[in-house]
Image (cartoon, rainbow, N blue to C red; front, side, top):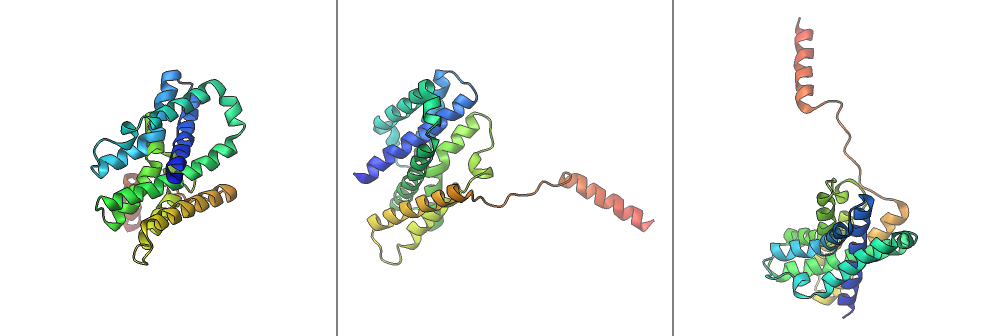
Length: 221
């Protein structure tokens, strides 16, 4: 029951973040709702399709869609008030990240997925909605360029997998995965931790190859 409640809280937080991305691009109310739904349930849809679960849970239980629409309307009509309390939204988002990670890992394991697939599906469940959101507005997915977000989910999923050989039962592993993911995400938010970024090359690889050949010919003359 607690996991389900946290799942709904995370869905609402994700839906709100999706709605704010729509506000950034000044989309109409339908656009706000679409981005809200895509962000709120996108990860679960991807997970259920990958593990062949059948009708995705978000489409079987209408409460998820209702929550996403409610989040979208709240942002559409009260964006300024919600933005002023963004720290609370981000904490709820971290809770959602942890819960989605654990649920994704548990369902992937139950479907017979391998160790690495369990961790991957856990992260896709937690981050898939954000990726769908960013693709819809033609942005590079934020989980690939900023924040310690997908990494926190991967770590939580890894703990879920690693605790199984140690004899921990499913409920305990789910709890640990949630807590670990939330802790890593909150620490990253508090201290602005992010992964190292790739450095831009001075020119394209093909241009660098041509330049190398030119330099070699000059040196041979």
